[in-house]
Length: 111
Image (cartoon, rainbow, N blue to C red; front, side, top):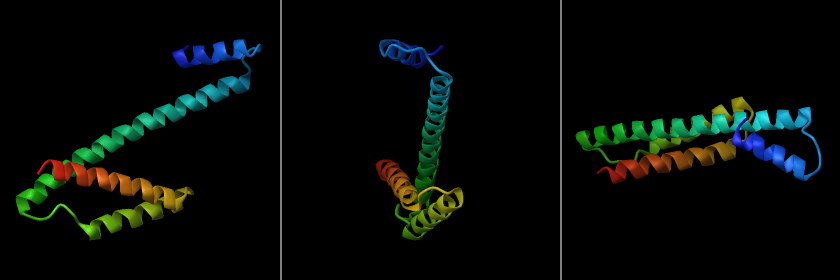
């Protein structure tokens, strides 16, 4: 059993009760969320890597690091994808603005 699982069992023991099937399901769902979080961070890293490559190409071409039209398209597409997935569009757009900010940062930093 994982360290978290042991910790949860200790917490249950401190509460004076034995683990239930619901506790096990709760633990498994948390593990699944942790896996998704690790995947997201890996995808963020991949996106930053790609942004660096784009930044290098922009420098080679002599173009600026900001591309408002491209950024607007990314935000629009993110909202559409969120709507299709049934998740809050505004929050997804905010997340994508943060991702665009990370991309801008690495492109400017690498100049």
